[in-house]
Amino acid sequence: MKIKLTVLAFFISMLLTGQVLAFDVGGLSYSVINATDVKVTGRASGNTATDIVIPAFVVFDFGGQNIVYSVTAVGDSAFKYNALTSVIIPDSVTTIGTEAFYNNDLTSVTIGNSVTTIGDYAFALNVKGAGTGG
Image 1 (cartoon, rainbow, N blue to C red):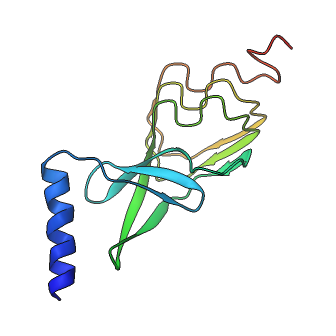
Image 2: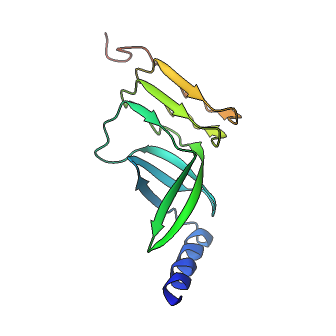
């Protein structure tokens, strides 16, 4: 019980001091928005997949305590220049950041019904060879 309280206290102090908790799960990187939500910030190190499925929720093991977060946003420039060919964005996502998928090779995009904000240039330059002179 003492460990759980310590982990919880540490987590709360991070949120209150404005520190960002970032973590990788399932080949993607995330940043905590608040106690229940995260934004996907890109592919995790070593992930070269070109077909991306963003999950509706993610479970993070925080010192033995499983914390379930809803994925509610795609961060600014999250997948910029990643050579992606397809992306599936779940209904949990409400915001797609500026240049989130800028300059890829997207031929298939599925966007959930809950998206209300799409940032500038979020899907710009998604033509095979864009930006490479080809």
